[in-house]
Length: 197
Image 1: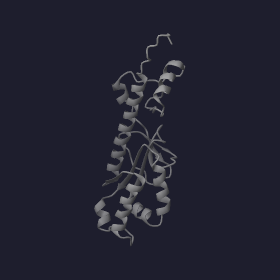
Image 2 (image 1 turned 45 degrees about the horizontal axis):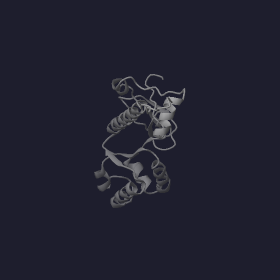
Image 3 (image 1 turned 90 degrees about the horizontal axis):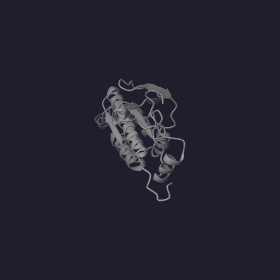
């Protein structure tokens, strides 16, 4: 396993794990200690279509093509997706790009960890500090409806630095929880059988 590379577990049943652990030549590599697990840091994938990408200071990042979202984790692109919008992007998603954006939100529902990250304050929307005739109540109503319809958590941050730091924290803890789950799977003990199998 390359330094810094994170392997995340696939969804399998407990019986498959027991069978694969004891009847297969393929073994999962388990970190020897919790300290070793914690020292493994994920790499953030930045979608190639992201025109003004966030700058990450704590975790490594690289460009890649994501099916959904703007940011993900290398090796967990099918599990972790962050859709980032500025206030002006969001207003466009409420008007001209609404149908396309709702298809994006529908795809996000399939991800275990998903967030709609808005860079800018909710107060900017309520004060109408954007270039559009759309009313603040309509914008906020769309956000509330999308949260309910697409089961997507919505998070406002004040600036791009805060957005980058928050994505790094989410990525770190998401990867850590999956590594802990993988370590628990590798500690499964076979049941004692009288027939010696």
